[in-house]
Image (cartoon, rainbow, N blue to C red; front, side, top):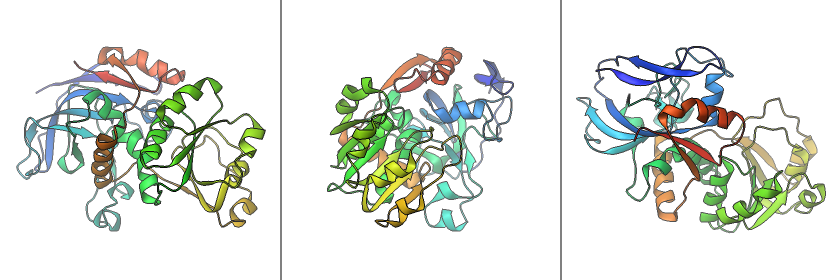
Length: 335
């Protein structure tokens, strides 16, 4: 068979129609007919080779929703005709300490769905079946894709660090990640403080479930929450006044980064020492976390706000993302 997709030939290049013949299906693999795939900021980083791991021609796409068409001889938990999703991770070694403990996403030999292989902006993709997650019936395909990377990225630290309904949670940045983080934190039962430098986003932030909106450029407003938050999730790439946000935490509070600032950060030590505060990071989530997140999203109606575009408009979609004009996730569809 021939796979039809879109590939860029060089860093920052335009996408052109691209064809390739897939490898024979391995025993643990499945072949998936792609319905749609979400566009993530990581796809833009990969296009520009910001992380030095991109191979060209580059076929992006790691928020893939599709229908199983073929199953390898060792696959017993999935069947043809089943709807599944594929996130950032497409394989891991399955035998290291992280994999054995169920934290496959921390595996040192982790494989990315569009890193070193062709991704999901195509009509077909092959993947290790253990990293293809069944999609609950309650979640529409066009909404499911962004949950598989952006959604699990913000859900995982809330779950992993024990966020509870009694907590006050701050979400820094109301964008592709932040608007889902607000929904998840609210569904956890938390009082949610949305921080954004764009006052015009206040109404949307409140509609996503925020209890309070803080203009992050208003020093008085940010200072007004000092010592009051239990957990802060930073979803932005920009540099922040780190000491100010750490000081917004209560004793034993935690700030977690799920997006990497473009430059190294400088932390005032006393912001951590006083009150035993901590700063940590989190990245995507294991297959087990994806199962848990999708079930939670289905039960609590966590729905990404998307713009649906045809796969043929991939260049327009990437440009919109580059200009920060997406509100809030773009999904490219083959239908």
